[in-house]
Length: 384
Image (cartoon, one colour):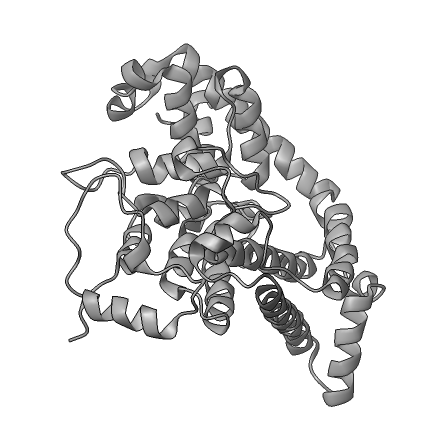
């Protein structure tokens, strides 16, 4: 049997000097004995997977509202794809794959129903009470809102996974500021890997979903150099490939090209900056995990295209506007008449205040549950 102590010894032998080892963890808020045959980060990963918040990601929106169709990505499928990409990168760089996977699986636990539209709505509604940031909400979920253990609230995850949740950053994600999680320190390399794996996943898979929905088409994408280069190479190799297979091959090739570039450029950065420990990474004060300048420039037109042609498409804007309306109306009626909340939720008002409790309740909803609640409260013919 491979024991927890042997796992630590293997980490020391196999991982790079700048990787985060479980033996160097800053620990948990609530002290617990070590598990006999799982490292602390393996244990964190398992706790995330078994959480209610993780299961609810199945019915939370990525771009397309859940009832638009069951083909499109949800927060859960997106999260799994991020974890897969992040594991590949972390393994190649000899980082801690268990820590990387735990952060990747937890990085979206604080998301609201209806994607970024839901987050924007709650941020506006909570503007007088601290606002809403889904990274901070994710930390609140794992530290407080999950109720699974008799000895402590939340999941009692390690400092490093909690840091990874709060310091997750991308074009759509703002770093949260939590004093106990060293806001002045750069995030671990494992966190940095998840950040870019997240971007790679949603860029390329939003292209896939956009094409499937018909909101964008390949003729438009063909004008982009990064797309045109990939398709030209595929056409040379597979002259008679079917259209459906061709699309998947293009998406897969785009992901592979970006991951390969990221690993190569990050290795160059590591050789230049020469971090000797995981703490050296935190003191450097800049991101080490990055694309080459050439790849960064190649990705920009694709990201701009997605923003203009997909995320601002009138059908997506309509979905977002409707979503905000549902959340605004639910928030208003719950705050005005909190007696309509479940009893277990009402009990938290004395400690957390009515607005924060309502915010937690709505943020934890799936798209489907949010729509059902709206119908129950505002449709006179719907049973309550």
